[in-house]
Structure formats: C-alpha cells, structure tokens
Length: 223
Image (cartoon, rainbow, N blue to C red; front, side):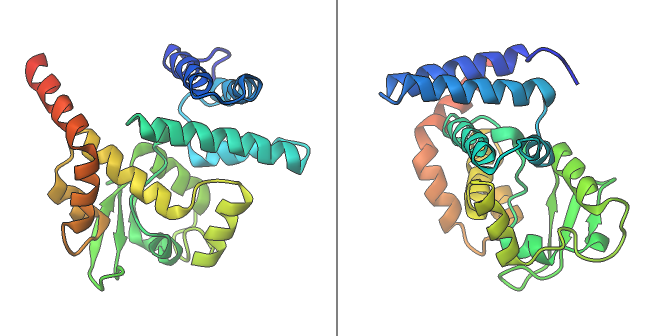
C-alpha cells in the first residue's frame, strides 16, 4: 500500500469535483465525496470490489457507510460516462450466472470462467480481468468446489442494494460500453456477453458511434 494517491487518481478526482460543481451540484458534497474517495484510493491504488468492501466495513456506523458507498457509486458512474475503467470490477456476466458459478468452473491461471449453461442455454467462457481474478481468490479462500459467491441471484441483488452500489445489470452494461470504447470488436463483446444477436451491441455502439470514431482515428494517427 502507498501513503500517497497516484497522479492518475489525483487528476481524476480533481476533474470529478470540477464536473460536479459545473453542473450546479453542492460544492460541499463534492468536496466531501472527494475527501472520502481520496482516503480509499490512498489505501487501494488499484481498487477492486473486495477492497471497496473492506474500506466500507471500516466505517463505525451504518449512515457513514452508506455515505461513503454513495461516493463510490457516483465516482464509478462518472468514470463510466467518461469511458474510464470504472475500477475494472466487471466481467460482463449476468447476475444469475454469477450466482450459479461454481469453484470448479474457473481457471484462474488461464484467467477464464466457464458458464456451463447461460440464459440462452449455451455454453461459453468469459475472460477475467486481473482484479476480477483477485476478487475471486478472495471469495474462494482456497475452496475448489461449491458456489463461488455462496449467494443466490436475489442475495447478490440484496448485497448491492445494502452497499448502495449500482445494480448488477449496470455493471454488465458498463463492461460492454468500456469494451467497445477501447476497441474490442462488436463480435467479441456479443460472444463474451452471451447475446444471441447483435441488437444489444448495436444499441451501445449507436450511442457511442461518434466517440468510437474519434478514438479509432486517434489510434490511426498515433501510429
């Protein structure tokens, strides 16, 4: 752990607070959110969902915990809107698929999770980010069989609500937007998300078409 916030997060927090003020929201609230986020990012320069949970559990009272969770939620939403990694906690799989995930289905060495039966009734595998792998290790605690999260689909929803976190589908939607903005092909996004058609991907692509076009030209010119 580091005692100082990284330049990247310092810059992001500065812009986050400025954006908050520019849209006419309370400056005091913005300053308080940034102060709490700063303390979290000093402890966890590469935050994961497990880190966030640990940080929130340190709060002595429920009202303070909810306030800090709200700060995290607002910041994550702001990062998503700007195309940043939103703390990179997502995998793109559905809440029901997370609930059904078994310890024997993952391949942490290879960085994949197998979904034997998805919503569409088909088998598929999904890639896991480094932070998702670390989160899974924390959930499993050495277990090699049984449920990964030990929660039902409704249980996952309840946990997210208790933490004042975005619903599971918001993480899935954010994962798709982030992937598309960063050059992942529509075919790959559709395959990993388990969509049977390109309709959902087309919806996100249409909303991002201008930003995606600019990004593609920037990558071209940078070469």
